Length: 225
Image (tube, rainbow, N blue to C red; front, side):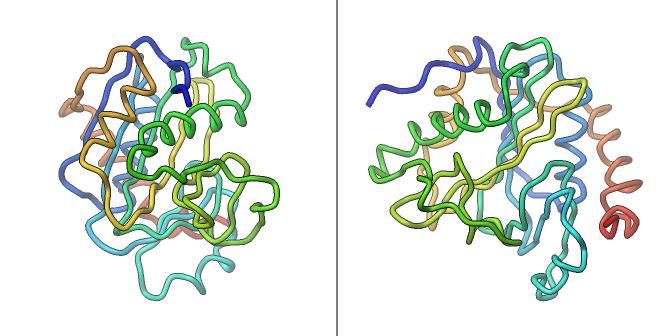
């Protein structure tokens, strides 16, 4: 099977080496959305077991699933996602780039096609969810949605989006027992013809820390609905 065509001519790749908590992870992604002038792919881990859940979800539906784990409400939609052993992915597409004008389903499909191309050498059975796989419910990874990736019958990649005047923010979670060493560079290379490693400025980090404290770490945001 041929790899999917590139989404971008250029892409910045931010590999977050040091895990941070949920509020700061969410704040980093939102701050990227507000400030980036080029597409940015960010990959990151979590310091321990945690839960994120979609902006529209109701707190009373989420709380019974926490089992004492810290939880953060995402800026994007989607269902409840368990973190701690996953590789979390965010992609910012500034409004000036043509994929920001695509429909949500097309962005989701193209992004996951690129992920599948990067995974296929070690997961030959990776595939997009078929109509008979689809279901709905609170927990994201027990209920495949259209465009999600499965390995056999098990969902391994799901995500959600937020569309704004600045462009599109995608947030996803890749859940595998082990991650192939070359996945991140292969994934980035499947998305763009030219990739550059990128790191945030001290100013950007400060802005994200302020946002984490004022929004994502507050009960008002967590229990918004």
